[in-house]
Image (cartoon, rainbow, N blue to C red; front, side, top):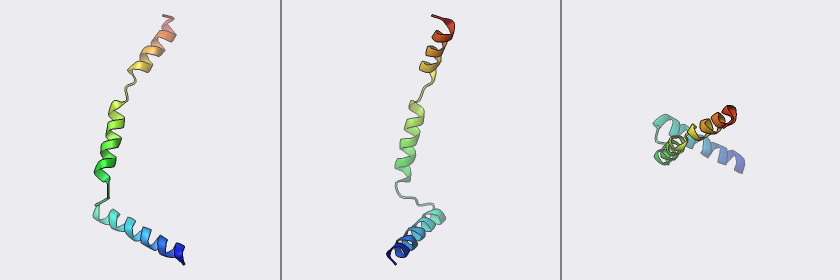
Length: 56
């Protein structure tokens, strides 16, 4: 019975957030994800690969 009530509550919350678009902590999550993606740079790996392939 407890699992059923937890499932109903969780399902209702998810449906509400889906229909209204008011997802809690959405801005913080998007900010964290965008910070992670902009900090990535493949230039270090490209330079390392160039040195390996080029022999120098």
